[in-house]
Amino acid sequence: MPKGLSIGSSIGLSIVHESSAAGLQCFPIWAYDAGMARAATTSDVFNAIAEPQRRDILMLLRAGERPATSIAEALGLSQPGASKHLRVLREVGLVHDRRDGRQRVYALDARGLEPVHEWAGGFEQFWNESFERLDAYVQDLTQNRSAE
Image (cartoon, rainbow, N blue to C red; front, side, top):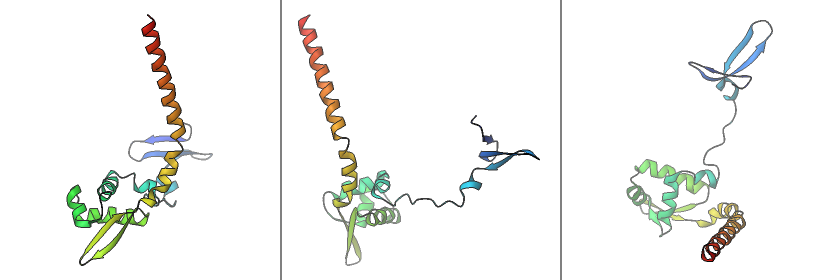
């Protein structure tokens, strides 16, 4: 076990401190991070699309705008559950909404996916080079087998 850590039977992970008078003292890990601010899991587009149901909503909205009730029904979500996901997507700029009578209609705003596109695009050269190496390997195998 790493120095300074212990696993307590009922309190979980603890940090162990040495004390000259009392030997070792255990403090539950939550005592150290309880006051730390937690980043919202929906604060950016990456966190927002980490949730599979939100990605499903985006896929539905690719075909065009839809009322919130239709989105909930199509995905088998409760109305409050769908509304929560739609709110998160709206806050990060992936969807926008408008009122249509008593309904709220949502539409995809793909411009919000630009950070994801830019990040994933950084791997394009890696994948292209990997596929080129694979192609060269397959060609070598094919030539070696035909030579035999």
